[in-house]
View 1 (spheres, helix red, strand yellow):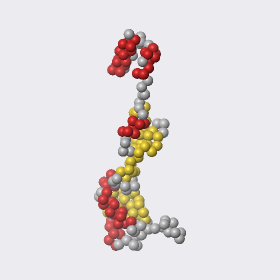
View 2: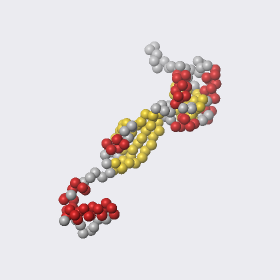
View 3: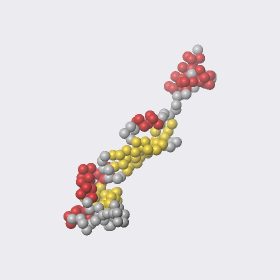
View 4: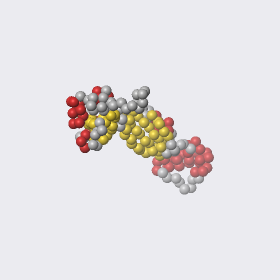
Length: 182
């Protein structure tokens, strides 16, 4: 009889959130403890960080209700869990592409001191998205220097890699970087 009454109460509670006042749940808990001691979901903050080929990282945060960390790690199986605190999970993911912002508005150019940079729009406006390395501007061919001063739009991953490879040979080496005499 108690099991039948308990099942009825659980059904009322699950379907309608109603707990009859004349039923002692403590007694029912003792009889059916395995039903009521299921782990309850807890709210955690999930931090997601995407690292792109162009060096740009984009982070987002969301709240999640989960029963276990394993459950959430399984849901993000292509992400790497890098940190876990009491109320937060931190995931990272390497993206084999350039960032959406570089694709949308990125333009290669040079800063005033000759650093290869991706700007948001025209390099003259000096709105820097990402910097890379110092260019030996004296060694650059005249056309390359002219193009960089005007700005070279970042079209896609392949174009990004081509520009980076072509300009890497002009990277200015500082004495402390790879010079054994320094």
